[in-house]
Image (cartoon, rainbow, N blue to C red; front, side, top):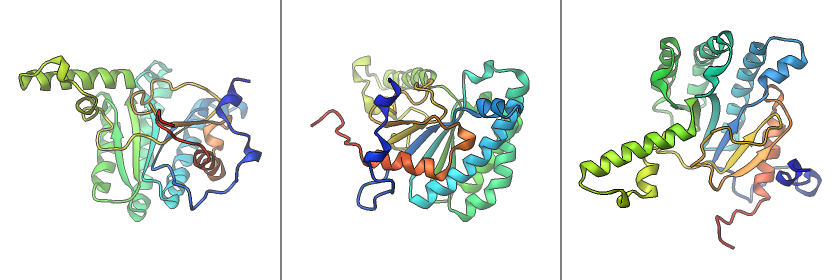
Length: 252
């Protein structure tokens, strides 16, 4: 019953993306359900993560084809270090495998890679792969493929506040001079617009410490589909529902 509050009846809205209504400029996705997908198939959890990586490639292509400006993917949270060591080790190897095979296509598609998170805490081989991708695509001007990697929103807000306060103190200012604008420019998403649409797969109805500040006025779309099964049609349905919502940002 609770889940239905978050969804419109798919039969009541057009199933095609409208060219007359605005697209979400920034789509953020919590890619959930890799482990459950694998378990249903009696496979190890890492098989779900590997399949999920292929879905990332497909959704990047699709978002780019639609004209989405920014696609942010929650790849690894600051809390995910609590998982079993073998799973964490596998996840830390995935960026190298992903970028080394996908960079040529990203270049062809004019996609720019961005990564937000506590990158300095990543293993060297993971960080090297990330930095290679960022460097290789830095001059691309199309879709921004933004990975949240070793990212946690509460820590991000605390860090941004600390930096902003040091800036104020150095300028001889006080806490009363701290504004939303000052704080926002020190968030890891600085330079990116806030997400218009958040998609979470696998049926969970929570944010899991993801972009808590930035999602204040985003539209939420939840689906039961596990991430490895998420398709272009699923993405389209989320965009269609977004286009059929009324965004008032606190007004009428």
